[in-house]
Image (cartoon, rainbow, N blue to C red; front, side, top):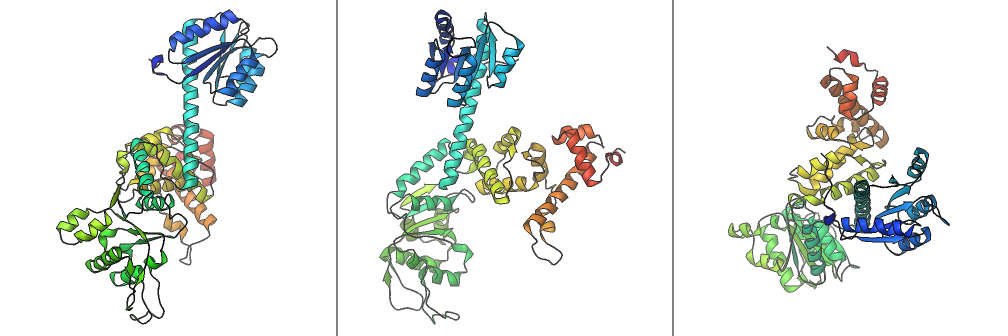
Length: 478
C-alpha cells in the first residue's frame, strides 16, 4: 500500500491558489494551510497577481482555475512555467471534459481537478505535486553543483565529511605553513594539494608535483635539489631542480613516506634552512617554497620502525588534512558517478548516458577499496562497454564479473601498434555486443521476449541487433 509522508515534514514550501471566486480561493487556501502548517499558502484572484508572486519568490505548487476573466488558466499556465519550470501546476475546472484536461496536460500542467472538489483528492494531488517540484529542484541543484565543480576542478561532494574537508582546505590555504595530506590511495590527495595552492596567496606562482617513489633513489635528489654539469655520469648540463623551479610557489611531494633515509636528511636540511645545494655544487641558494606532502602510509609506524625521521615528520606535519575514504561518504557517490560519466562521455565524444537508479544504488553499496579512483575507472569501463545511451544493472554485472571482451585485443592492430581511435572503438563495441548477446541468449535459452526483458532493450531493437550480427536465436533453444 502506498503511503504519503506526513505533511508536517514539509518545510520552506509555498503554495498559490488562483481563482476569480475569492471565497473559493481563500477556502481552499485554508484547507491546504491546515494540511501543511509549515507551508506558506497564498490565495489570489487573477493570473496577473499570480505572476507577480512568481516573479518575487519561488513557488512549488500552483492550483489555478481555467475559466477566469482577463487571463485564462491556460494563459497563466504557459507564462508561469516560463518563469519557474520546476513549478507543479494543477488546473481546476467545473467543466471537466477530457478534452480540456488533455489540453492542459499537453501545455505542461502536472494534473487537474474538477469542481466540486473533495478534500482527500486535493491532498493527494498536492502531495504528489510538491514531491515532483522537490525532486526537480534537487536535480537542478545537483546539476549546478556538478557544473560548478567541474569548471573549478573542485572536490566533488556535498556530504558532511566533504563539507568539513572543504572548510579545512580553505582555512589551511590562507596560511604559509607546511601541510601533510593523509588518506588512502585514490582519495584525491593531489587534488587537495592543488586546491591548497590555488586558494592561497601563491595561486599565481608555480605549482609543481613529484611522485617520490616513481623516481629512482639515485635520481630523486637531483630531481628535487638540482645538479651541476659533471656532477655524475650523464650530467651534461646544469639542472635547476624542483625546489628552485617552484620558488615563491608550492611543491607537492607525493607519497613522502617512500623516500630513502638519505633523501630524508637532505630534505630536512632544505626545510630547516630554506636553502638548496645542487648535487656537485659547493654553493647554496635560498628558495621560498611552500611544501605540501602527502602519504597513504602510517608515518608514526614508520618512525617506530626507524625508517622515517621523526624530526622530518614534525617539519612536515605542521598542518594536517585527512581525506575520508569513499565508504565514509556514501551519500556523495551519485554525485561523483554523474561527474565521472559526464567526463568519460566528453573524453570519448559520446552523448551523455542515462544511468538507471539501480546502478547508483549498487554503487552506493559497493565497498570501493580503491576509493574515488576505482569508482572513476569503473565508470569509464561502463561508458566504453555501454552499447546504448543507457547504463543499467545488467551492464554493471557484466563488467564487474569480467564478462566484457579485453580492450587490448581491439586496440592493437595487425602491426602490433595502437590503431585509429574510431576504428578501435567500433571493434571494441562490436566484440562486446557479440559477447553480450551470446551470453544473453544462452541465459534465456533463445527466448527473444525474455532476452529483451532482461537486457532492457525492446524486442524490435534486439531483433535488429541479431540481424546485424547475422545471428539466430533459434540455435540457443536446445
